[in-house]
Image (tube, rainbow, N blue to C red):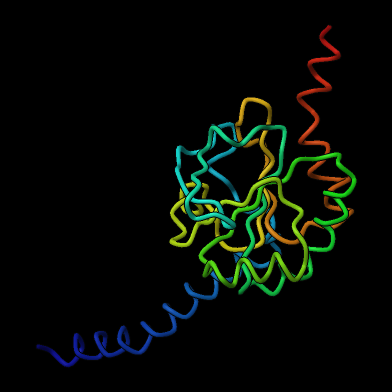
Length: 189
């Protein structure tokens, strides 16, 4: 091998780490400024996945997608989720208003810890699905907790919110999505 080709090979080896660094910076920079609560969901417009799980409070009773009646919220929570503790008082107020049906999905949790979470903080949910292995969460496309799905009267997912449900989130995002179908039906009459 000539000394000229050895020099070009060594230059390439020296420039390779720089090139990889530039590519890595470009990839990471492309994610900057994006809203993490705006994660795409493959479930939008689709029916709830078929499932059969036990209830959190009664491991002898099963619940399936047929037991979810929209319009409703499906709130993904867990005792290991710090944000879920912050979100819970907002869900309690929402449930007390009786303006919305909320189903809970206790995600990748231990049953005793999920029960303690609800007993300590209160129960805003009509029913709580116990998803210990996270299979239902995976089928819904859950990234983590908390997440909240809006389900219409046909039990199709119409919206997904990643993050804490607050009064503002309810009024500005979830409630309009939840009742948009009902408003459209009334306007058509």
